[in-house]
Image (cartoon, rainbow, N blue to C red; front, side, top):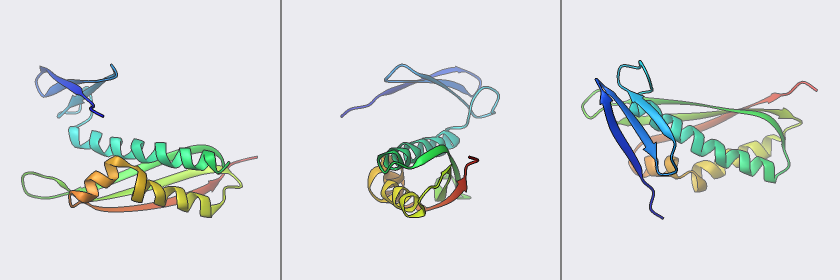
Amino acid sequence: MTMHATVEWVGDDRYKATTGSGFDVMIDRDLKEGGRPMELLLASLGSCSSVDVMAILRKSRQDVVSCVVEVSGERADAVPAVFTAIHVKFIVTGRKLKEAHVRRAVQLSAEQYCSVSLMLEKGGVEMSHSYEIVEADA
């Protein structure tokens, strides 16, 4: 499967990325109109992992009302300032969630399903994952 995106310079340090499916994302080194490229990489990782975790939790009939993914990355001090370590934390809120199901969903995403996570890990980034379960109000 081939995917594609187009990135167009729109002035100063701003760019418009258009995905192959037709969606626009603004990228801006100066943070005036969009996120930085490396921030968007973290967002891609968080969304890729979240899609997996939510699909697995839905299949296991967990009553999830919210899933927030916090992604933080450490970058090298030298140029290129690549990520050296990234931590992905899931905050899953729901009713009577089973900890074993949440743990398994996060583990399966990290080890088998999330293409972004696996690609980064194979590229030498130290990846770590954690989760927190929050009981939703009845």
